[in-house]
Length: 346
Image (cartoon, rainbow, N blue to C red):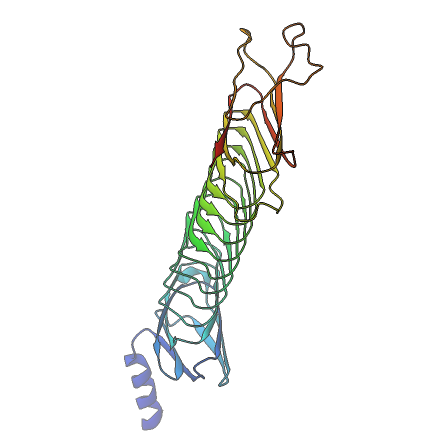
């Protein structure tokens, strides 16, 4: 063995057990990284390159370096566990990252973010662009664009969202701040709290509460077991629960728009506040009224049974209604055995 080869082998043996990669990239470029397994730790204080440091030398990294797009993939034996990937990029780079096992952690970024893990947490600071996140427990700061969130069962916490927000999770609670667009959420189980939405809100959950301080658009919410509470709703409302209470205040800015209401609770109470000046046709029904004949339909409006009702003569539901300000928007309220309260707002 010649001297040069011996020196080369000696230097290789003396290197730390890390792998390094470095690719030049534009400030608004794109990083595509596919890790077989690993905790992805992203530092967005880089200047003009993508720097990779993998904590296990058994990981074989493949790099395709282009100024606009850097693509990184890797191969590793399953026995190595979950190594750390330390990644340093410029702040404006779009991050397209996925790992088959491990967590993802990023600092604030001015680009878009597509973050996917098959079995780990995702934690991020503020993200200015559109965002897709897939993981278990997910936590981010504010998102400047649209947000699409897919969860495997852990808690999801977001700050404000500058566009639309779409959630789909097998289970786990969801909280978000101000969503400037629409909200669509499907939960296998878990509660959801959207502090405020400038658009429409559509939510379904098998078991959990649905809450919001202010929905400017329409609200369509359904839960098999849980309460629904909307402090202010700016448009039409549909709220359905099998077991739980319903509460909302209809607070529209445009009285000429569609302001119909459908509220149904199989086992639960329904309380709503409706503007006094709104045109409405009210139909309230309690399927199983108390045996003492005392109505559990309470209202500031003058509700009366239908003219042809044989109240007190035949068993049946307690049904009352009214035409308000000449009639118009249909307000249909149903509960099996709870109390219905319809109050007026000035």
